[in-house]
Image (cartoon, rainbow, N blue to C red; front, side):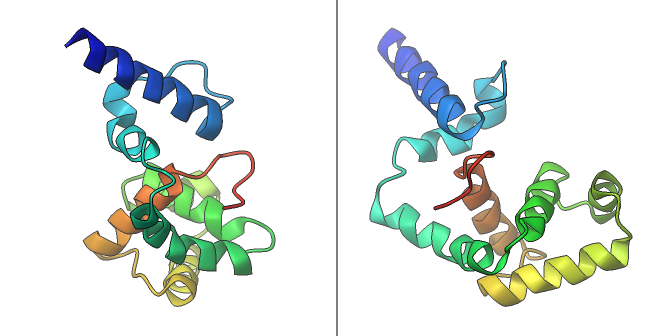
Length: 131
């Protein structure tokens, strides 16, 4: 048990350093799933997971769509809370989400699409999202 806990905390630390370098406090409960994936970040299966997100980033020159997607994930897909956090109207949010769906080929309004994009976003560094 102690080895397993030590490994999980080590994975959390590595994840935090690479993905959330500005965060000073991380809890395993909050980041359990992305930390599990982080251990396998170089596997081919995760490469497939990141393909839709790469398509969005390639066409997102100012980072607006990625910021929108991060906010969407942080607000659990709650459109009004997400729009408020971004300081935009819900119609603007809807347009951006449609653009993300168009570019990625994944519908972020459906559970499987939201999960795929959420996991991809969780594996991106918040400072330099180049993947």
